[in-house]
Image 1 (cartoon, one colour):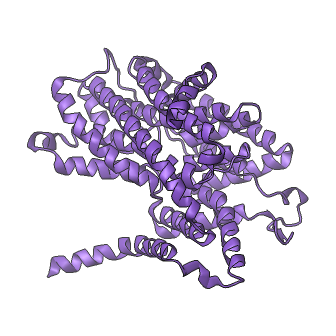
Image 2 (spheres, rainbow, N blue to C red):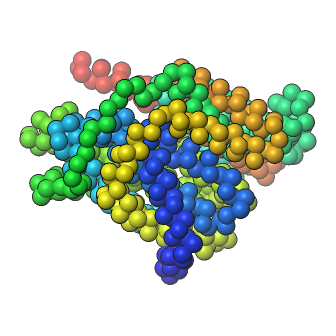
Length: 496
């Protein structure tokens, strides 16, 4: 009943308008290379000062979904992923486009995204309340364990090495702890600057890392080169044979993407990679010979996994208040802007908001299908925007946003400093997601740690007293150790 009320609430003219705007903006940022949903949402966070919470969150969620759709267009026609989750689509999609099958590739990407988005949103509606009920039974020690698991696993799987991921996480934790300790009043990492007593705004950090850092990276390094957009004519659709070869990868991609979104797996790169490899292994003789030359299964599966992963990441965000990706962390910051606590109590204290948001995701998913298939030609034309114009606008909006949040030039100075840090991270191959989650989750984890120890009268053994916490820490250790030991174990087994 609550879901029906939420679905009806999402059909108001205002919510539909914000959903449509978000869908269009999301598709736009997905199409444009180098601009992802996290950047788009951070640039729009200042609207939280004037827009009603439900409408703003509907728009942000639509941007998230839309970017998953739009990224495939750039991957297929430009051979450059619009966002990180579309990397695997590039492998087969661009080959199909070069062979004159751009319409089929674009169609299976859009329809697969729609199928995965609809199924995964349904799973979100069913699963999130159950996980929220579980969250109400968790102790502060259990919550601390979950946050450590999220921080540890994401730092391990992101980037070129575990060490680089942990370095990124450590820097994020340090930034998150800047300011005055709320319990003792002690100044931490302020270096005597009174403007830093309130801490560094999460919004400024995220805007600077994505917008300023990306703009500086493009200015110093360059990313677009002389890439040529493949000409696309006609309409995006598939033959009967292509339909039969696509629906199973859609289903398998959804089955892979959604649970890896719920778990702290670090974003959509892993599920799309797993989906691509699964389709390659399961392909018949004819389809297997086409992999690397333009196999439609290699587009259908990863695109479905990509969109299902986006919906899955909203489950821990809404039900537990724990983000498992950079974009989810940005959305958590938007909840904070409205003084709304994401987590188990969200479904009881903000029932109308959360169910309207979930209902709007169903509507938005349908809008995205209508937007993507008929308007492919329009999105292709946007790829011709000169990157220096594009990033000049992004940089201007980012600095204005930093000033609007901090209401002083100190915020802009922080934005420049963090932007330079983002540039260095990109230049030397350090992952940004662990840093962002360190900034967002770090203070939350500290709060839960203190609560747990205070309840136990200073006994730190309370952190590993309950079976739930022990299981979580065991999973973390396995996640860190097994990837290192598995190649050696596999080598020994091969020798025997």
